[in-house]
Image (cartoon, rainbow, N blue to C red):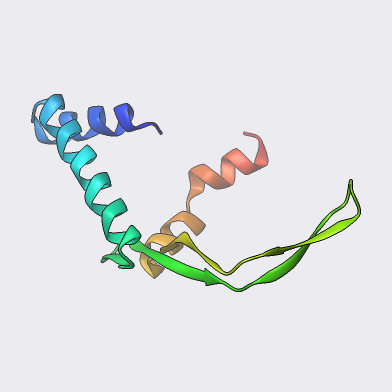
Length: 102
């Protein structure tokens, strides 16, 4: 689902203007990015958590050149779904049918 499809779906459900919804969505993304860049996690009850996860320093290999390089410690953004959201996805009949090729 794309951002424009999300905006259209919200517009149909709420009756609000698409431009207002798109602006609100864009502002949410700006706030969320800034929060995470500043080291804060985002908790959306019933949906999930956008959190920062630390990756430790490690040694990686360049197989083509047969060399090693050190990847420094860094943070990555990660989404962890809420339990009820994860169970809805797990129990989805639509996804089950899609996986079976129906």
